[in-house]
Image (cartoon, rainbow, N blue to C red; front, side):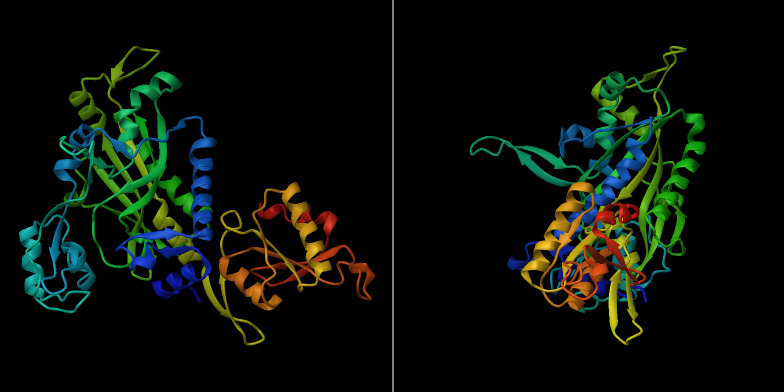
Length: 468
C-alpha cells in the first residue's frame, strides 16, 4: 500500500534521517526543514541525475553557479519588486499568518480564486466563515493585504552609516539573463541554446503544513532556453515532453501526473503561456514542475534598464535580435518529497510480518549496498570489512556498514531507507561450517523481491554492476 498521508513520510523521514525539523531544539521555525544524512544525499543524487541529463549530455546547454544576492536593480527590472506579491491575512486570535487564496482553497478546492484582489478574497473568507486552521477561531481574520515575497536584507550595516537594501533571490532565473552576454561571448553558442543553473531561492511566504513541499528557502534546477520567436511553440512542446519523460525515467508513477495549463489571469507578469506538471499528493494535486514561455521580457527589460546590448547576432547573417525564452523549472526540494512519496510502500509478508519499504530507483538511493556481518563475531566483522574495502575500490557504489541489532532488524532498517541490495557475511563465508562450498561466498538479498542469492566475493563487483 502506498503512502496515504503525509504523516507517514514525515515520521519515516525523521526516524531514518531524511529530513529533520529546522532548529528543532529551539522549537523550530515555520516552514523550515533540514535535510539529514540520507535526505541530503538523495537530493544531491537527483540534482546530479538532472545535470547529467540536461547539461552534461547536451551540446546546446551550459551551466553557471550564480550569487544568491544581486544588485537590487535586477529585481526592479525583472518586475519582482512591483509584481511578486501575495495577499495575506492574520488570525486575530493566535496571530498566525496565511495566504488568503490558500486558506480558501484548502476548504473550497473547487472555488476559483486566482487573480482575485485582496478585497475580493477578504469578502470570500468572511462570507464562507472560514476558521483559522491553527486555533479554530471563525471570522477572526484581518483584511487581506499585499505582501511582497522577496526577502529583504541589508548590506553595509555599520553604526552611523546608511545601509543598502538588497534581496535574496526569489528565483534563480535572473542570473542567467544578466549573464547572457558573458555566456555568449565565452562559449560562442548559437541559437537555440540554454543556460542552466541550480541553487537556493527564497520566498517570504507563510503557508501551513505540507512538509518540504513549500518552504521559505528551497532548491531549484532550471534553465533558460534561448530561441527565435517564431519557434517558441515547437520548443515549448519539446521541453514539456522532456520534463515528462524525465519523471518517467525517475520511476515516478505516471498515473499520478497530469498537465494543467494556466488560465490567462494566473499567468506571471513575464509569461505568455505556462503549464504545470502536477503530482497527486496525499494533500491534493500540486505543482511539481513548471514550463513557461517568457517571451523576450527579461532580456529586453535588462537591456533597457542596464544600457547593455543583450542582443544576439547571427554569425552567418549578422542579423541582430533579442532572443525569446522557454523556461523549464524543476523544484528540487519538492521533487525530493515526491520521490519519497512515490517510493513508500507498506506490505504484509508471507510470514505475516508488516514491512515498510522505500522502492527508490537504485541510481537515487542514498545507500545502494549495505554490508551486514551476521553477528558481532570479530572474524565476521573482519571479513565484512574486507568485502567493504573491495567494493569501495572496484565500484562507485554508495555503501553502508551495519552491525547494530539483529540481522532481521538491520534488513528492515535498510528496507526503510531504500537500500536495493544487502550483503550478509555469515560463518559459511569464512569456512566455519560444514558447507565448504560457501567459503568466500556471501548472500545478496534483493530489497524488492526479497530473494537471496549466493555470490562469490570475487564476482561481487560484476554482480552489482546493474545498480550503479
